[in-house]
Image 1 (cartoon, one colour):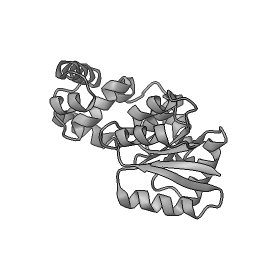
Image 2: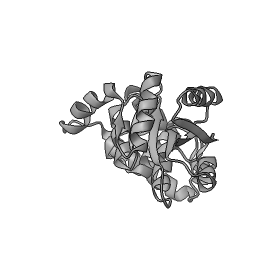
Image 3: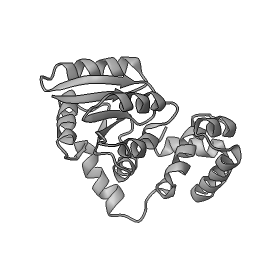
Image 4: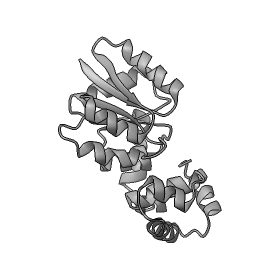
Length: 209
């Protein structure tokens, strides 16, 4: 039996996923979490083979959680479930340790296939995305500027465009406001932007919001 932990902050989506997994004879949901902190806490107490991870959770987001999950003893495989069918985002998640990347509008049967595949040590990428990744991420130097951001800078970028302030972000990431201001200045410089409004516009244009 493949044990799955569902980390997703929208209750309706989470319930839907649990029902879907419940229909499969070889899969079962052993735990759930609505945010990153809850996820890490649940993982410490609940052995599982696969974490189904929503990438944009409040608190510690999915991208930040991946390295933490991978650092556990006997870590489960991480299958990212994202609203973004964005090749850059998928490449980033896989680079930092996710075993698979599925999008929320993919066929339910494909999601079950993906869970089984990563549980057995394989990799899974949403088929529509796989093609685009080869062309967008692999073969071209004309990559969007946000792919140059470090994980922490990208995380700060995501939070800024969601309307969080420097102090709020510092509190959530347990670092000083000065550190966040430095990240903010650095990411603005890398993106060639000058205001949070510019960041939001950039995020919308690149389907990151």
